[in-house]
Length: 284
Length: 306
Ligand SMILES: Nc1ncnc2c1ncn2[C@@H]1O[C@H](COP(=O)(O)OP(=O)(O)OP(=O)(O)O)[C@@H](O)[C@H]1O
Ligand SMILES: [Mg+2]
Image (cartoon, rainbow over all chains, first blue to last red; front, side, top):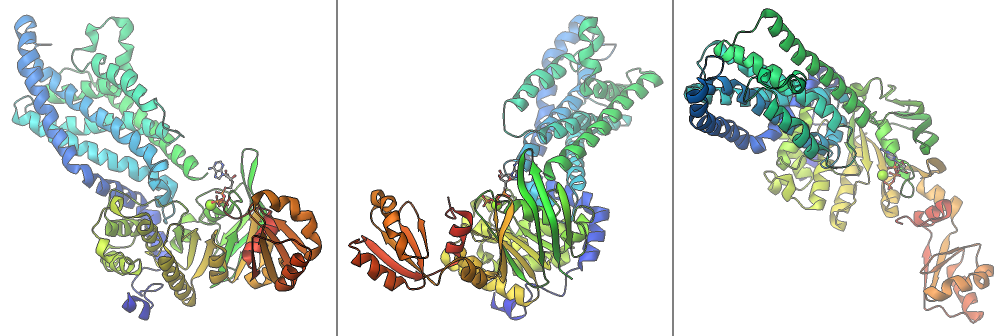
C-alpha cells in the first residue's frame, strides 16, 4: 500500500492507455468486451450448463427412443418413414436450446437492471448502452451454440443422429433460441418489479410451444385450428430445419427459405427491440 | 476551461422536476461537493455527468464534450462510484476489477497488475480471491471505489462514497482521495456527512428539490448562513417546542428540533447564562462552533438524515 502511494501510481501508473485510445477501442470492440463479461460470469454455472447439455439428451434418448419410440415404431412404423427417435431428436435439441434461451434472457436480464444492477455498472464504463445490450445477446448466443453442440455430440454418440450435414442443426438451434430469447430480453428490460410474468410465459407460451408445436409429432397431425401455435413458434421453424438437416426430412427450397426468414426476421426484430429497451432503461 | 460545465441542467420524471435548471462549473483539480436532503437530485445530477441518465434540457459539457453524444470519450476519463454498489457478486474481487477494466478496452497485461494495486489500495489483498458475495458491506464499498480507479480517470464521481465504511476506513479513504486530488484528479462528491464535506470539498453546492440553494466553500457557507457559535439546549421532548417562544430573545436565530433547540449566537456561553437567569434550566446544554450541518438545517429546513 505504501509503495503504491509513494509512487502515486494510484492516479497515474504510466501504464494505462490514454483516455482517447480507450474510447476508440471501446467504440470499436465494446460489444465484445461486454459479451466477455457475461461469458465469464457464466463460468460460475458453466459446469451446470455443460452437465445439463449432456444429461438432457441422454434422458430424452432413453425415454423417447427406447420407451416411447419402441411403442410408436411398433404400432405406426415410425414417423414419415423414419424411426421415432430419429424424428424426435432434432426437435428435442431445438426445444431444449430455445428453453435455455428463455432462461438466460428472462431473470438474468431483469437482475441486471433490478437486483445486482450490473448493467448500470457496465453503462458507466466507456461502453454505450447499445453495446451493453449487444454484448448480452451475443454472449447468450454463444452459450446456446455451445449447449447445442454438446447436445448434438451426445445424440451422435447415442446413434440418434448420423454425423455430417446434421451438424447444421446446431446453428439452427442457436438461431431459434435467439428468435425467442431476444424479444424476451427486450421485454425483460421493461419489467419494473418482479411479478408472475416469467412464470406465466413459461407456463402459457413455452410449454404449449414445446408440447404442441411439432416437437413430438408433426404439426400437420394436429387439427388445422391449432396449427397456428406452430406457425408462430421459433421451436417449430427451428425443428423443421433441424429435421431437414438431421435426417433429410424433405423440405422444398421455399419452405427452407420461409423457416429461415422467420427465424432471422424475428431475431432481428428482437435484437432491435432489446437495444431500444436497454437504451431506454439505462438512460433514465 | 472548466472540466464540467452545466447550464440550466434539468431532468424531469413525469411531473417531478428531479433536477431543475441548475448551473455550475467545476475547475480542473477541484474538489466539488453536492449536498442536499434525500431526493434533492444529487445522484441524478451525477448520472447526467456520466451521460448515463439522459437530461431533459439544458447543456452539459465534460472536458468540453457532451456526454450524451461523446459518451465513450467522456466516460473513458471518468471513474464512477454509484450510490448503490453494483459489483458482480458471482465473480471474485480481483475479477471484478479486471472485467470492469476490460469494458474500457484495457488489456489484461495492464489489468492484472493494476487489479493488485487497487486491491492493496482498498486493503482487500487478502480477499482478492473471495467471491464478492462473501465480502462485508464496507468491503464491497471499498471494492466499488477501487473499481472506479481502474482506468486511471481524471475525474472521479463519488456518490456517498463512505456510506457503510467504519471510521478508520473513512479516514483512510479521505487521505487517499486527497492524494488523488494532489495528482490533479477532479473530485465530485455527494455526501450526507458534513464533516466529510468540510474535509474533502473546496467548494460545494447545496441542493434542495432539484434546485441550488447555496454555493461556496465550506467556510464561506458557515460564515454566510450560520453564526459563530451554537448553543444546544434540551428541556425534554415535550417541553422543547413550548419554550421556543421564550427563548427567542436570546439568539439571532432559533432552530427547534424534535429533541433539542438550537440557538444561533456569536457568544454561546453568554446566551446560556442569560437563559439560566431567565429561570429556564435546560436538562443538558452544549456550546459549539457552527458547522456545515447548521448551514444545511437553515437552508433546507430539514435535518440531513431524515
Ligand atoms: N429512475 C427514476 N424514476 C423516477 N423518479 C426518479 C428516478 N430517479 C430518481 N427519481 C426521483 O428524482 C428525485 C431525485 O432523486 P436523486 O436520486 O437524484 O436524489 P438524491 O439527492 O441523490 O437523494 P439521496 O440523498 O436520497 O440519494 C427523487 O424524487 C427521486 O424519487
Ligand atoms: Mg443519491
